[in-house]
Every structure is written in structure tokens, then in C-alpha cells.
Image 1 (cartoon, rainbow, N blue to C red):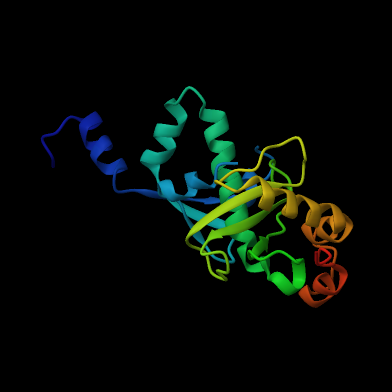
Image 2: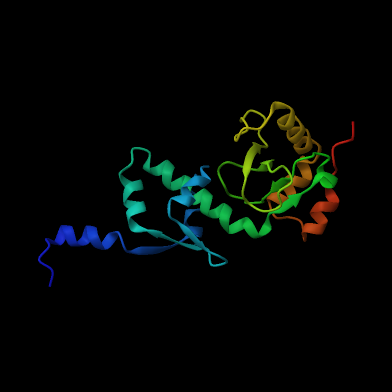
Length: 187
């Protein structure tokens, strides 16, 4: 038996415990994907993730606890939908940079497109990315030039119906989605 007081033992134990939580339980919560990097790991295809209890304890005592939990939930839901991400190249979009579109209905931030900045033609995660929301009143994030942002927003407007249909997982296949989108006209 340890000679540590009970409180000290439980603090030591919580550093090493993980708790499995069904991510589907968080769908109603309200977009900071960086929270997933704080220690949560998605168990692919299960609707569950693993994280240190200490992360939940830190979140629970933060002044913005509800928002941090909601942000974590959104990040985990996005990770669950990663299998459905479509990489759109210049032939698909008319834009030099690679765009990534990931349907994830139910996420508070709504639909958005990720834009590869550096390297601009990347087809795998990594490098510098920017995010352009569909809502024209919301600013883009991630160091995107105003010219590139205008192109991405023009692509969104040109393809809004098809993009929203894909966001809501209404196409039967990626092929149907790709057939429905149009590239920006060449200048």
C-alpha cells in the first residue's frame, strides 16, 4: 500500500489513465481543430476517441470550458469524416493550389474548403494550409493571399449547390460529386 495520501495517489493515477468516449455523443456541441492535437486520438471507424483524463480536467476548469469541449468535439468529428475528404486539383477547380473539401455535417463551423499554401500542390496533410468558410461574412484563416481567397470564394459560389450536397453526404459516390463541380473559367 502506498504511503501517499489518497488525493496525491489519484492525481498520479489520472496522469496515466485514458477514458474512451463516444464521439457521437458530442455531435450537438459547438472550430479549433488544434485541440485534437492536445492529446486526443481518434479510434478510426469506431466513433470513439481516447484522451488523457488530465485533458478533460484541464478543460473542465478553464474559463471557456464549454467552448473548449465543443471545439474538441468538432475536431474529433472532422477526424471521423477524414475518410470522405476529396482532394480537388487544378483540373477540378481552375485554381493552381490544391483544395480539400471534407463533408462533416453537424459541425458548428459549417462547410469550408481547405487550401494548400505551401506546398501548393500537396495531396496529403501537412505543410501550410488556409481555410475558407462558405459564409462570406466569416474571414479566411491561415495566411491566404486576398487574390487566392477571392478565387476560392468564386469556386464556392460557382459550385455551392454541389458542395452543399456533398457536405450533407447526398451524393452516392465521389465520382458523382466530381462530375457535378465545375472549374473556374480560365482567364
